[in-house]
Image (tube, rainbow, N blue to C red):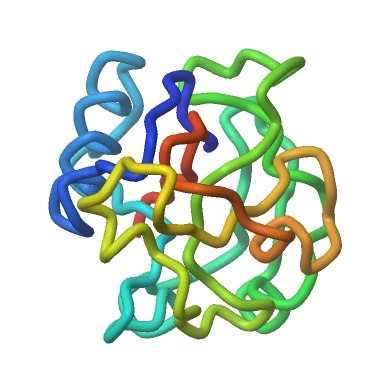
Length: 152
């Protein structure tokens, strides 16, 4: 899912973003909320190395999003629902810090701890199924964005 909430680049690092995913999943009464992690890279950690895709991925509305062998490059359907299963109609951009194949990008809002205009973060789009779901143009870290969460 893409988070229902938005934040500047201060996500509390990868651990803070993971905790936010788990809190949102628990509030939405999703099964095994403690298994949720943020689909984010840091300057030293690739998302593909920390997010383990075990089988087909479905969104919170029940539609197939992706298959493990192609998940990072392109999706079957966009990740355009939040944790409650609500279609994301506005604010369709997410923080990722991630390239098209799940690799780290150099723009991560100082490892998700900086919310100022002086630094940048890579972002993606919730309404596409191409590699732009993970890697689009980026923004300054004072910009409000959602981020993706996934159960592992």
